[in-house]
Image (cartoon, rainbow, N blue to C red):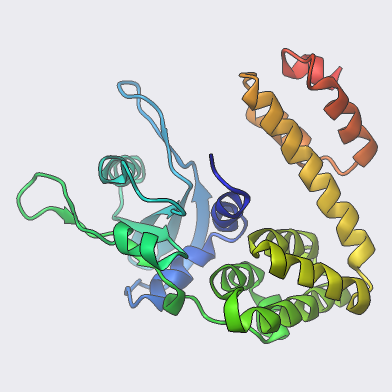
Length: 281
């Protein structure tokens, strides 16, 4: 089952699809000048196959045409990815009619090593070597101004560097970046804090919360925001866990709801709800 770290890591590329190009550049992959970037469906399906869902997919418009990127977050051994990863690339390539790269986020070095193994597709000279993002590929951001300028990369930096000797520095810079985003009335404030708290190890996250209580005037508002986000995610998870199919608009209505009282009302209906209509009343 996907973890919170897994889900947030994938969501980063929907929030800030430019992140894919930034990481490819950090890994030395040459990309023509990017004009625009958008996230696209990560569902890889056609009428003749079963559905396979990747974690995220991005299409970059460059001066030399489109470039696609399939993003996978791997926190466990890649047991069947030698079969599904080539499929993701092939379907996105056919759908978008453009070259496609596979970008794998694997913060654990042991898992990263497994993900880097070449995949023999069976066709002569066609070997897929995944581009695996390791710690050395992710900038260590400890300047609040740099984090505020690129919050998605700030979250990724916390994910890859937020443990061990650097954890205290990560916490300090996260608090400072949060305050800077708040002072600038930046709309990305809530999501940045929600994401950075979600990717940190539990002990480090508790340190972040403790420092936020004493050093940030935005802690109370952010705590309420996190409570709303968590409640909304629980509702979606419980409904889907019961086998209730939610339409895209139903999921958005739940996840984008900012009324905590309404969310708690929906939560109280989950047990007996057999459809989205039952949930919403």
